[in-house]
Image (cartoon, rainbow over all chains, first blue to last red; front, side, top):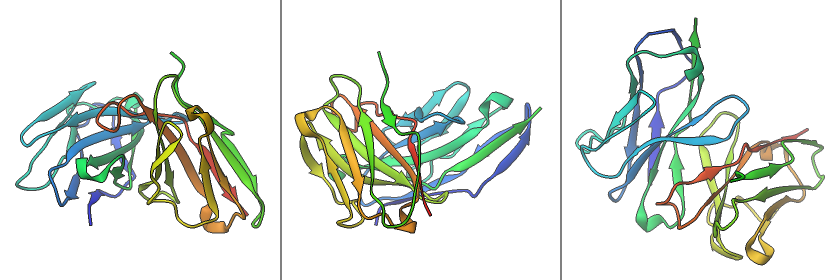
Length: 113
Length: 114
């Protein structure tokens, strides 16, 4: 079935380090892809999205490129800050699935000063 | 605008008891979703309302779970009787047009069944 797999966490980085969180997906159709972020004590927020192959989503210094050939949507940031500490969720949406987003298990990121 | 509001933020109950979670979506959002995250695993879809109608309830785990959205405004999710494996964080989300328009999530209700 359709699914999303993220790299295991927690990920601990020093401030200004480079971040990559891997995300791969399996889908029967042609999905839209999303990254959501959950800061401590808050709900999920959409971080970025891409709706077709080779699209690059970007926001707040984060980027992810929709790679159809490798079925991946890895999240990257060149220089993380303490304020980026959160749980990051990769997700896909298929139009033939009605209303549901399919999420990965989440990757906790902790950035130390 | 006010965001999606969930109540309570945290609930601790004993196995066999009943709990009701509430979600108030953003005003004017016809689409309302319930999701659940259990024990640090993936967030799983439970069901989707369009106004007061259940559009998709394929993710509801069993008949101990009952979701309602009378009048197409707020929604409740009742678990009766609760079991240990029901522990987790229950998220509600709403959107204006459907999942291809931005989903706005609430802060979640953390349910602990002891």
